[in-house]
Amino acid sequence: MIGKKIFEIRKRRGYTLSELAERANVSKSYLSNIERNINQNPSIQVIKKIASVLDVDLRALLETESSIKEKELPDQELIDLVNELKESGIEKIEEFKTLIEFIKWQNLNIDAKK
Image 1 (cartoon, helix red, strand yellow):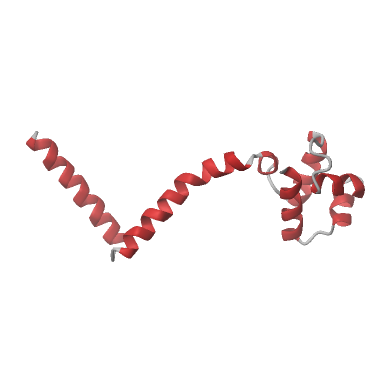
Image 2 (image 1 turned 180 degrees about the vertical axis):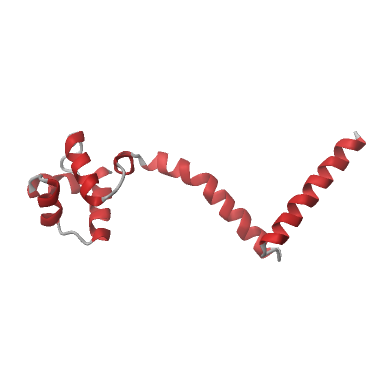
């Protein structure tokens, strides 16, 4: 998992394996073993060095896939809601606000009838 993240970020940053290893002051073979998940438990000191060179937060490398998905869920739900509203014809922020105000008004009226 961590190796795949390092590999993907390294590629996005445009570093070769050799460049990242040199800048992080770790051996090229050790970094290669991490990226290929041969070494699945690298030291935290090495991960800190790599994160620093890649200019990412250490937690970004250490997070598991499930914790990332949990964080993305509310955002995805919001995106799905916005897409659904757009499909229904509501596209502008003012229309969203009007819809929210209507729902608030409707809820107040339902509560008042009880």
